[in-house]
Image (cartoon, rainbow, N blue to C red; front, top):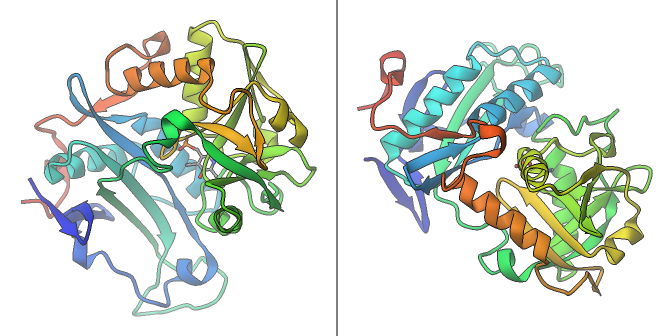
Length: 332
Ligand code: PMP
């Protein structure tokens, strides 16, 4: 069992780096690291939940596949396989003793200190892969899941896919997210919703978005510069399982105000109801019935209290023993 407290945060005492486990305090980079200057990183956010049968990571394979997809878009050649990323994650959590945690794999362009390169051209810079895990509570607050949050439509547009592909979960995309988030916070809102470059609804700074209208779910298509969210996909599958119709279509800003219910989805945000947009009350101004039903099923699935739709294997257990140890160094 090995975790440690860093001020108020509980973190695993080890970090996985390029196939080895190193101490948390040693997981550092040089200030001339390419990613710091030019945003050249891709990453994931994954959660491990404690459930009926112990702790398990939710949709680990899908997250690691998206990580590799993001890396591929940015021509980052990775020697580690998807399975190796998954195994390393399980081993890291098992070793940490954390029952519930947030998992952050990241791949970036580093710095070859023997033969440094400082230009924009990323090719001379080595690829570095890390995985860190820590305890992280509810992203938008405990209360948000029940009461809902107040959001605004951002004056910033979402990145457009022909300049910064939203399909990649790249660090640089989060400069756009930060503009959206900061504007929202300074305006007294919990989160901002960005429109795409055509003016249609895209997504939150770190969440996908769903409307409920006449018992039907509506969500922006991938073409609206959204990240293909894994929670988004989860909600679509749960809805289908419950017999709720799901439509992916372009959404006008004004439709947000008129929705019966509105909610965000994301690994960090889970399923968070939205109670107002631009200070206009949405539906009943609190969590709606369909949102509550989807949340209920979602939380049952992530805790192993009911099978996933179509019996999909969405939970990877943190077993007491794995065969990963044989392939990685640094754990004791
Ligand atoms: N959009 C953005 C911009 C995000 O950062 C996230 C969080 N990863 C999401 C959507 C939701 O994706 P997921 O459900 O896979 O966490």
